[in-house]
Length: 301
Image 1 (tube, rainbow, N blue to C red):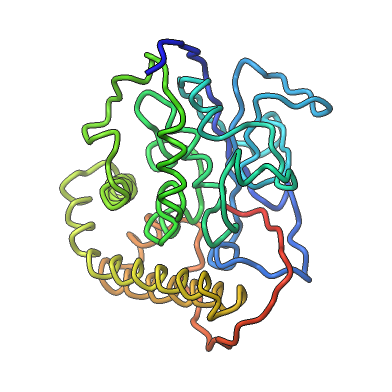
Image 2: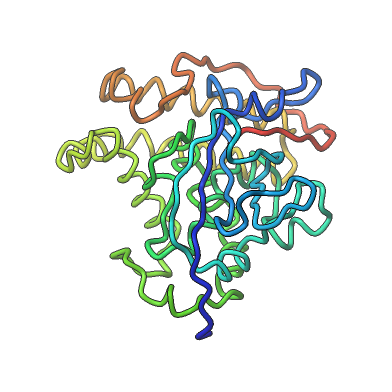
């Protein structure tokens, strides 16, 4: 392990998507855009690079979105200490979505299928002392619980790719002793379960007993949702359904998740777990015919 240290501050930001980029009517809306009332975009900035120069951006993690300066109206901020060199290795900053090297330097896959911006944000936050996540810091993260409980999980759907990135990067001494109780190499299932517990704890107002009861009560509901999203992801990956059909399958899975969650623990608690989500969204029949679809771009998550 490298002994080089580059301890600094990361500024985690979230902002409503609408001020950043209007969704075009001729593009396919991802499932994530459809289940939330107003999508929230998350991104990060290296604190030492502030104020940012829009004409020469440095220390900025786009996280699947356009540039948004941190002092613009409506931007929420959270500051955390991190090994900056490790963060830059895990996820390269200053890389726009259009950069041909983005899959290699940032994340592989398709937006909405393999990741959303919340997943990229968590990957950068992995370089913090406590391996902070959007579930443990206090900024708006609309739709986050639905992402974490799905095949996308905490760090994205492609677990092999994520593990390889972690092995390739060597954290400095500042990251040798993480404060998380579990192993630094915890499996995806453990990581997801821990984050779900965090989400339920926040929704329970910090009441650990209540949060544990919620997690137990939703065990089967959440498990069915995870299975459904894994199946949808597999069908799209193997080419048996189109991207549009995949998004509809994910929306249908969310509709069932929200409905069964309300039936199990009530509307009020469901709203606290999924703030800003359209809990009344309905399922629709799917045209499962595989089609060739044009690559699209969206801004949520």
